[in-house]
Image (cartoon, rainbow over all chains, first blue to last red; front, side):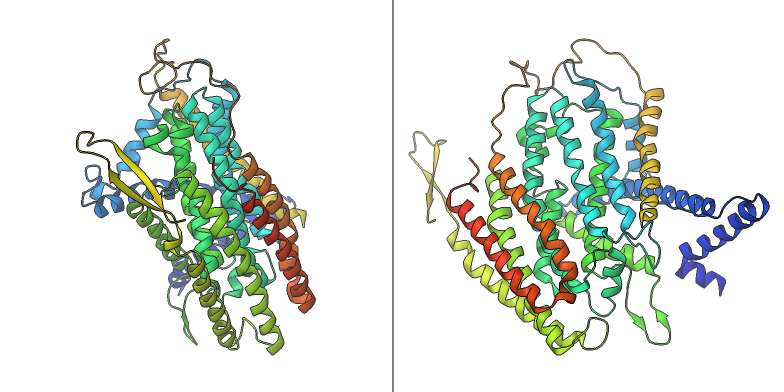
Length: 420
Length: 118
């Protein structure tokens, strides 16, 4: 029985045990006030979270290389350990022992501060995420706003790195990072408003509880896609990795960084990747909630559902990287401002309409009247998707036609644009 | 209320140990043999020409302006979204007007060519 409880609710059982022990030790024996126990519990939780995030990052680097390799019909890392699972450890040892080169003429303070600052926001955003039932560092009432606010500060660190390196490519990369972030913040923030309307709260804990019956991805499929695209873009991942496009500007803002500073940039990038999948899971895919049998309980432990869903989203992101080529910068901006922002605004309006329908009939999210409301939302979303595809039909977009000018100048190829 | 942020502060303190600890371990382990050639700006083997910190044509400053408008508008939309279920149909009518104005603003910026990457 105790083993089962430990498997199903490890954080709860260990936390209770620790709290009991600390209360006995600190409050009853030493006579310290109660809040010291809470403080030590919080420190333990935060330390555990940071440790898990770092290990997750190492695992993700291995997973991404392995999955991409399989998609490209290669083997990927397979030397260090079983299936190359120890490759990240070898990489870490290598990065720790690499010489740290500060280019002459760099702005030393900004240059050295940037890798530190870029890691902090990516770790801090996890403070408001419920990893399982009641397992959360602090369930702020403004949870999602906190994520947006903290998450956006990493852009400043990227610009600092690009500016401080005294390298033109790095500066270009930093500038691109800001431009891209500025453009994709809007659709990301607007797409979540639909969910906020349905729950009436910004707290991620409440958002997960509201998905007791149906995931919000079913209520808001269009918003889910917008959120995923905008978030992938904000994390600078392929196909939106223009700020660090290797073939155009070498590596963007981290051209000049080596050793541990380079490692910190990658730590931030992979933790951001995981953070995105965690937010997508929490906001749209029901968080830690999984199917349960009446009278028997959950099929799998909360934390396992959470991990399964998060890694499913991570896999989709790796899949996107393996499939899609990088966008051009003007295509990137067009996608954000001319497609995603109007679509997110329309989604916001239609969600308001759908919610009014729910209110008129007295339908709720947390009983069986959720299903007629789901039908209303699905109809609205299908209409919205069809309308979007009708307006932004690929036939309306400029087509590129490659024309061979003459045989004698066989390598001179002009491009002509038709349509528009 | 403010006590909720204690967790955030503690997480910040713990998170700071990751980069600082990393810097410290790397400082102890790494070799240090700098010379002038190694510290040159890396531009794929070519010597860098001119200064990096020159006046830069920021192509996206108009995007930044539109961004500021939309970002402030989200400040209005979030409280509206949270309060929507209490306010009822009035909130819907109000938001249709608000988003209508936003749409007109976006259409104006689009028409004026502010959304073209130059």
